[in-house]
Length: 397
Image (tube, rainbow, N blue to C red):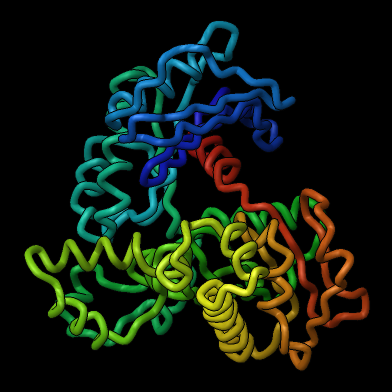
């Protein structure tokens, strides 16, 4: 079976084709991957290549002014002559809302539940639903599956998922859901398949444009920094992380016109590291500016890494100790300076980086802590799309 996986963002769509041998017990093999960027702009770009890195991008006009055009572009790319026929499609969907409790085949009822969940993730779910609907129109004769970023965190105890707010809102489904679950699950799965025993007390720091820290006991999530939405927790590229609720009320009173919409835009697109540094959402640019001594960039990095360090400290005491920390996500996997700064001062927790290993660019799973360090520090790639393909194979098989 050949599965198309679609992982959409606010202005881009990542897509991959995997080969699955159903019933064989083997894992998905990625054959092709691509990305359509600049959706809604005058200069969209598409990248598409095979597993050997050979470009398959067609020399033609790229149209992506709307989601409909973007999906047409993706579908035409993966349906080109010589490529395997897509037999199922899996989608990463950020928020399932309160009615959907597991990864599912997409049905009219599932689409209705996702539309009702848009109030929980107004910047993510509406686009995801539109993408699913458009692709189902273009590929109507094959099964489509939605995989949610929250499912992995359903093992959190009630005390971890409950907000101290009036019951009427809790009954509406307002609770801490947690996100980056597909990333966390891919980390646990990769470690197991590599023959690495999962330590009983482990933290996963998914650091990218969005960031979270998750505490696991025996491989299951017991708490995480994100809550009802992916906006809370630690400081991120364009999101502020946790804030005093009184600050949000203050900011609401400062807005004019549609205050809620303005605040929502600020919290999701104009806060976080970009607000502190005054730079684009690019860690490399922030690092470069900080090296030059820019005070704003230095402060942004200090606030960013301090918040992650606080989360690590708090979860360590919640777990009653710590056996391993895993860094994943674009920043977590590739930025040695962030790993070093986050872990600075945590030596009393049994953490000691191997500077040479931390600085190395070795791909795949690797240990970056000293051999005699009681708390392992690992770097593991986030393989969300691969994890979606795994789930599609389980549901389709």
